[in-house]
Length: 189
Image (cartoon, rainbow, N blue to C red; front, side, top):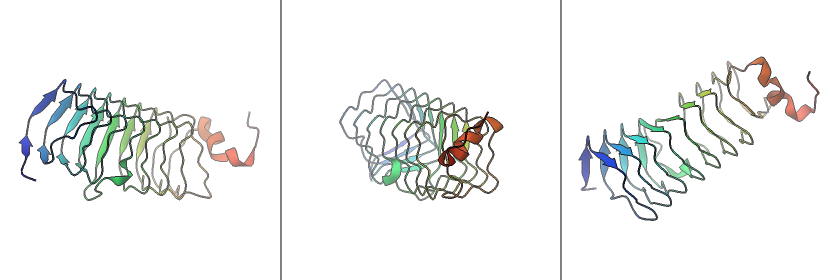
């Protein structure tokens, strides 16, 4: 990787169905960029920020996200299960991640704040101590997922089977109990 960018701001650029130049991006900001269907594979993104970007259906094969934040981004159908997991750290605020794939990812301490996570695949992921602040998890799949210490206290519409996931120390609100008991078809008033 010969391309190295540091403290650079990329603003209003359209990468639709194109490749982001391979290389290392350190402390860069991507603002109002359109990456729909773009290939960001084999890039190293260290302490980068994505703000108001469209990353729907972008390709992230072997992309290294090292302490990256996404704010007000549209990320429909992204497959993050193919990223480089070494030092992986992601945080999302006000993002739409519907239909995203986080299968088997190590996502300890990840923050999802005010996000739409409908139909997301979290199967076999490690979401220990993750925060789901005011997130909509309708249809999200949790199976053999590590959720120890995760905070769902303000999350909505989740369905998590306590017998098929690791929940020790996870936080839920009383209003969220139906999402933990759904498989039993209980009527809770």
